[in-house]
Length: 366
Length: 240
Image 1 (cartoon, helix red, strand yellow):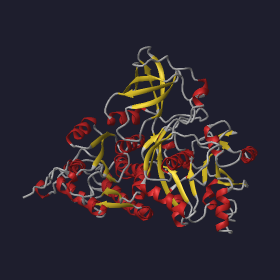
Image 2 (cartoon, chains in turn orange, yellow):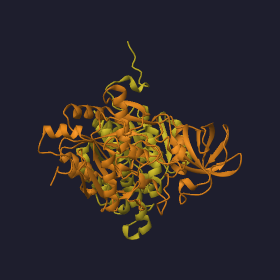
Image 3 (cartoon, chains in turn green, orange):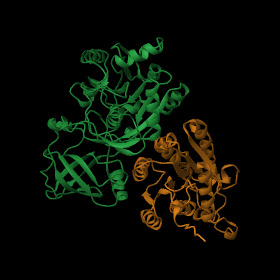
Image 4 (spheres, one colour):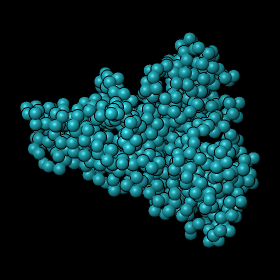
């Protein structure tokens, strides 16, 4: 698949592959994605802003250069910003793909890292040369200031220019808790949010600390996604339960929304206002209990995101979708094209039985 | 007789201020400094922004539950780091007060004698800065509205925004633009539950006023503490 190499959130020619619940595949311009929805649908986005999680500095014991990419934290609490899990790299910059970046200096617990204005201590090594737990010195305000001033968004080797924070800030971005942008949300602008209201499509948000998508270490990547804390606001929980009672579709913008809602429902039996930590993996073996459809980026087989899509559609349908996207020149990665995928059979048939005029996304509008 | 402890901000359950997440720009001088103090005394959680590190840290020490952030709204590169710190510290946002202002030339001069760079600086601080910061924080403000609060953006205005006072050209023109922008923001986003208000606090005894009118009779000017209290009342009134 082609890499999207320009950091434009909503290119006018972005493509959208629509896969409905019966496996019918259609292709359209993404800017018309709202036409695939119908009144009563509930759209849910992740409102996490992106932490500038890439910190360059020095490993003090050896004096060697190091890049730390913050990758996970215990909670979303504004004051709980001392301790992170982090992926470390040796010298080099984002132009080198992560898998070819040299390893960081060997680290032991107690080693000190000097990261611009921030100082951090390695509290634990985690069995992989690149993965450590660290603890920052200083007050939460000083840590936030250090991250905001010195940190950069995690960069991608396929982009020509470094990303700035505004490149990865979605229009609904709120608490800075994501380590990489919840990029499915790039599809949103305010015109779309207002248009949803006009069309009686409900819109709600959750906050989910989207983790890193790749570490450059195969063994480590197999462990992705890491545990991710999330928060479901009361209003969103209410919308979700109302939609479920009334058999209206729930459409997740991005994999993180699926992960949060499904995790919450698996713990409480339904979606409630809650703070939790999503620990599960969503795969072909998962039975989705809440989400009816997902709007997501174009993901390649073998990634955790692709496995999540297998919870929505059968392997044969996904393979067919992959071939179609390949032939139509779909672009992959954060700033690439999108898929809108309805969960297989069950939900569609149920909905269609209720309203024979609606037969999934593809024919929702002429 | 039972005493009411006014130092305890959570003593009045009908008061919407305790716990309210507020960001204030220009928070170490004049109205902004008084507003940070008044809000923190009422129990709000306040993140404030100003350019001078020493003054920011001193003000954060003096006011409980406040988070001082060093930055300049006129600098494009500062906006997202500032937004990250505001939202990082508060976890979200209910009220934004765009208060930081640039007078233009000081002492005031006729427009014809105003340097283009002085006008540009006033545009950057009084118009483009609030625009950028509002955009960066709008996601958080709309989330607050979706959760049933009444999200609010207050843009500090002036009578110079509506009256044509000679020598107040850079300030007056940029404040007029900000005032109009406030009205348009409000028209566009009231359906999302985010309200925009333009507030003219009146002539205050502040460093900015002293720069503009050095020989003013200070006795006739409103203390910034009074204006700040009025502003807190406006916020509380809107949220009730």
